[in-house]
Length: 134
Image (cartoon, rainbow, N blue to C red):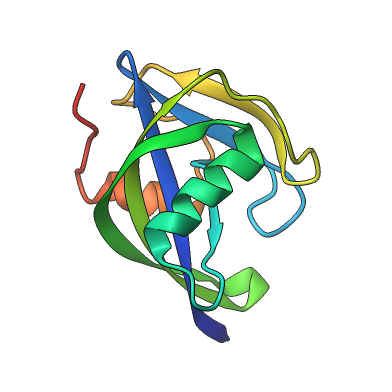
């Protein structure tokens, strides 16, 4: 098992909907996830959340606040991440900026029932009972 590595998610909420992308390529292909990625050496996690959000979707973070962390193990890939989840306010409409990493970005409105399958860190955050303020 490699890790634990430190990753982040950017949970963007707007008008009662949360931004989700269907992953492509790396571990979790075909699952639904929040924008995010691995923290670069020397980078603050909240900076990573904003950077990953912009790289993946084109959205620029206006405000970022930490939510909580989850411990996420991916046995099939031999990976272990500690994911620091962030609530992010951002303007604009998302677009697929990294087609090798995401099929699409959607605003998901049913916060009681997220799409399936969910990427491990997103599922773990939801399993805690945390829900975004709407």
